[in-house]
Image (cartoon, rainbow, N blue to C red; front, side):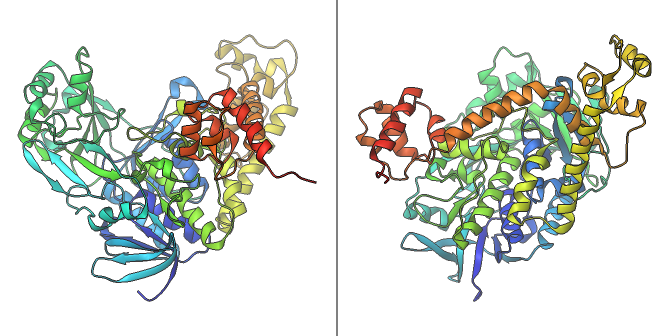
Length: 623
C-alpha cells in the first residue's frame, strides 16, 4: 500500500478493535492488519463478556467510545448481575453472547469509523533510530506509518498442545501462528517470555440430559452495557450447572502423565484463577467436586461451552471424563479442549501509556503484555490507540489514574509491578472500589473522552443528559422532605421504624431495604428522564455518602503525592540512602511519579522519603 497511515494496528481481536476505533475517533488515519478479516472480534475462548471487575471495564471502555459494550448488547443471549447479594455498590454485569452475533457486531462497529482493513501477516517492523516507521508484510510489501499498536494475542509463536499428540503451531484452533514477527521482536530490544492458557471441550447440547442439571435463567432484560447506544437483546437462552465428582477425578489422575501440562510439553506458566481440570485435581485433592457451567454458544446452534473443564488431555480422555459428569453420561464432544503456549513481553518494559521503552511509537496491548481476558485486552487496546495518536501528534500522553478506573489500575499494575503469571483483574486490586463502580463509569470517564474529542454530538448529548439527570435527582433528594404518614406503610414493609417528623428523602434512603425510587414515587417526583441506572447511581451516592467521601479524600492525598515527578533517567544506583532492593527495582521500573514508585514491591516508605530528598538535592537550583 502506498498510503502512509498515522497508526497501524496489528491484530483484530479485542485489543486491536478498541485500539483502531480509539485512534479513528481522534481523527487519525488507521489501518488494521490481521491474518483473517473474518475473525475480527472473535471470542477465542468462552462466549461471555463481563464479570467481577471485568464488567466495570466493559462499561469504562464504552464510556470512552469503545465497541465491546455495544457489541455485547447486540449479542447477549443470557445476562446476570453478579454480586447482587452484596449490595449495588459492587454489582458486576456479565453477558453470555452469541459468538457469531458478537463477531459480526464488532465488525459493524469498526466499519462505522474511518478505518482501513488489510488481510495479511506482519513479518517485521521498520525501525529507524529506535523509532518505528512502518510494518513489513509477508511477501515483502511495506506500509509506512507514524505509530504501531501490536495486539497479537496468543499468535506469536503459538503452540497448541493436546496430550499424546506433538504440539502444532497455531494462534488458536484453525488459525496459523505468527512466526517471523515473533523471531524479530528480540531485535527491537524487548525481553520475551512464555505463558500458556487453555480452553475446555465443546459438546452437542442435544446429547445432554438436562433433567439432571440445574437450570439458570438470565435476568434484567433492560440492562445495557452501553450508555450511548441502547439496543434490544436478540434472544434468550438458559445456562446449566452441574458438578464433577470422584469418578472424573479418578480418570484425570489415571491419565495425568498424558496431559501436555503435566507431561512436560509445556514450560509456560498458566493463569492461577482459571486452572485446567488437571490443575484442580492436583492442587485441590480434598475438594469433593468442581462446578461445571454449560454455556450456550449461540441462538442457532445446540453446541455448549463446558466452562470449568479446561484441559490438555488427549481427546479420548476428554470424552471419558465428560461422560463422568452428571447429565453428560451420553454426551458427544464436538471440539476437544487444548492448551496454547505463546510469547509475551514482560510489561515493565512499557511506559504508563503502553509505549515500549526500547522503540518509540511502538505500543503493545492485550495478551502480549501478559494479561488474560477479553476485557483486560480491550482496556489496554483503548489506552494504546489513544496514545499512539498522541505520540504521532507530539502531544502529552493520556494516562488513566488508579482512581479514574479499573483500566487505570490494570495498566499501572502491569507497568509498575510486572507479571509472573497471566494477569487478571479483580476488585481487590483496586484501592478505590466504591468509586470505581459499574453504574458510574460514564460519569468518571465520559468527560475524559469528551475533552479528547472522541465522542459524537449524539454521545455528548447522552453524557450531558446523564449528568443533568443524576445531579437533579440528588438535588431533589437532599432538598425534598416527606411527612411521616406518607412513608409509614413503606417503612413498615421494609422492617423500619417510621420517622416521627418530616425527613429529607436522602436521609430516609440511607436506611436498609428502603428504595430511593419508592420514596420519590410517594411524593410524585419521579420523571421519565431518570433511567434505572441514574436511580441506582443516586441511591449509591446517598447511601454510601460517608464511605465515598473518605475514598475521595484518600484520592486527594495520593494525587498530591503523584504530583511529585521523578526524572526519567535518575541515577538510582548511586543513591546510598535507599535500600539495595529499592535501588535495583527503581532502576528497572523507572517510575514517572512518586506514587508509582510507592507501588513497586520492595520500595518502603522510608525509601520514598529519602528519594524525595535525593531528587530535590540534585535538582537545578532556581533563582
